[in-house]
Length: 156
Image 1 (spheres, rainbow, N blue to C red):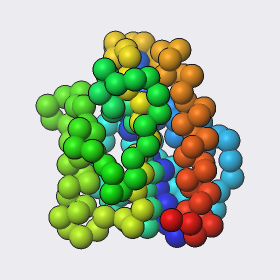
Image 2: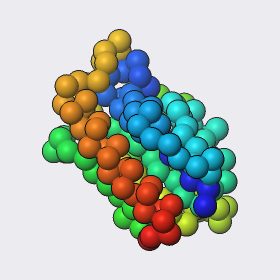
Image 3: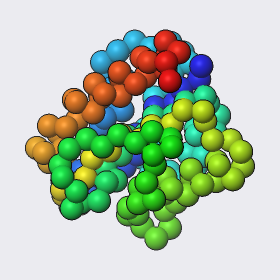
Image 4: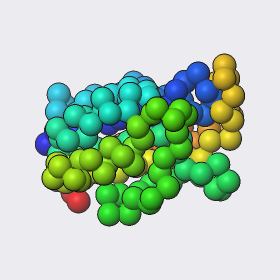
């Protein structure tokens, strides 16, 4: 099973970098087979489409839940993905919603897809993760690891 674990965001804008930091931490904490690829997706937009379409399962980490939501970890599986899953940093940026839409339209959506996200509290240029976002980082990675281990064992 080919699996891509993708972190989205911009580390220059505070909590916007949560997804990238989560994937970095995930990769640091474990050994996985070559079929598992960790991707710092940053804000690459359309260039990430192949990472979604070329595998059997995708896990995405991002700080994309609306800011006014309760500060906690949100996990959405493929069939549960909400319509609000993107907050653009620029009008030129293609978001996760559009990437999922394209993969579906082309009939190339992976069998398994999960989004693990948090609501950002600070998006200021030049800031790092807030203590609130940092406190959710470890638990987010742990939940991601549980899902990934299940996928590798053949669980749904």
